[in-house]
Length: 256
Image (cartoon, rainbow, N blue to C red; front, side, top):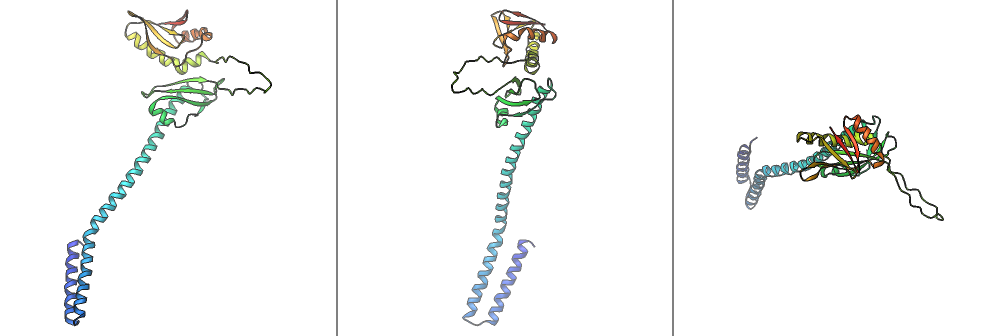
């Protein structure tokens, strides 16, 4: 029933009740009953007028609560999708060389790392001679991995004097090239070829330079680069990849 219909019904009830009191009740009760009847009618009218506003306010409050909860759930789902997407890309890196590799994040809150960029650590299984990998995430979307081995430092007996031991990093040049070297090298060569270059130099510190009118110009850098003890193996890896490579003093020269 619409409001104006309920209003006319209430007025009819008010008039009927007032006429009944006037006809059947004597003073002083007549005035008191008429006052009570009119007060009850005013209270009913006020509640009818305020009810739509109260319902509208409740609906807005409920909608705001749902929206806040929905935004929170949406943000969490977005982070989960982002982490899964990056996980698949890291798995593709590892499986290209080690099909049986499995891994898990050692870095807490990897989603923050993916949003802002930086370096994280993952624990890997199924990769001979390695148990961790450093993952470099770029806010622009690039991902680079470097395999490492981390062993616990052996505790020495109290009566033994500590001895300084030089740690030599174990590295497979073929793995390094497939995991992080190939992509950087192909991108640099594609850019240089488009500008007329046909050679570049990979320096011991990981920087990549080319000759220009102003001298050597740095065009890229590897996050890590094999030590010189591995350079002969690196030359064979580059040759198998289709490049002409040779050791030139403190650097490796690559031509195409």
